[in-house]
Amino acid sequence: MSSSSTTADDILACARTLIIAGGYNGFSYADIAEVVGIRKPSIHHHFPTKADLVRTLASRYREEAVAGIAYMEEQTSDPLEQLRRYTGYWAACIRDASAPFCVCALLASELPVLPAEVALEVRAHFRMISAWLTSVLERGQREGGLVLTGTPRIEAESFMATVHGAMLSARAYDDPEVFAAVTAPLIDRLCNGQ
Image 1 (cartoon, one colour):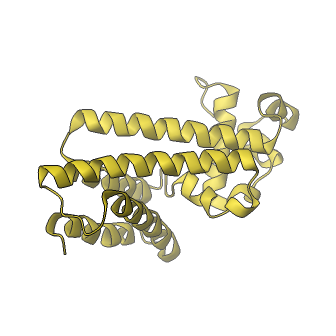
Image 2: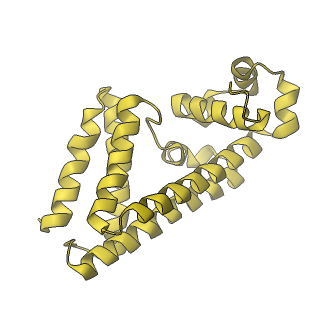
């Protein structure tokens, strides 16, 4: 993998790709060792258990999302534009296959079988996205640019569920354009209140 990253970073990057491809139980340390070019004991040195590895991955994933949101908010304060950029980010990631699915959304589908410490991180990611979306929708409603049919919190949950569902549909149909086809009407509804 990259010579400038650490072995732990390479392990995490590989695990992320493998989780997106097959979920929590869809990979082993042997798979990572083969891709990264190290022995399994080296992985255990960095991450003693698979739960440690995926917990760390989910935590870092949330940190990346927080940083991405902060960057986006520096670029624009307009709530509608923020929502468009958020869905646009995912549309681009799905189209170029750089991040075709939210790691935490995929892990959430496996919550009943995930170790407790991993489930905790996954839920924290969802709470963070929900809180951010709620604040964006509250601001948009207050400023008059967005028309909500429910409370900002319920609208935020609906928005998040629609985005994740659109990712799933794009994957199911093997068609990246499905994501935009599902999310564009969501943005239109928030603009028009219909």
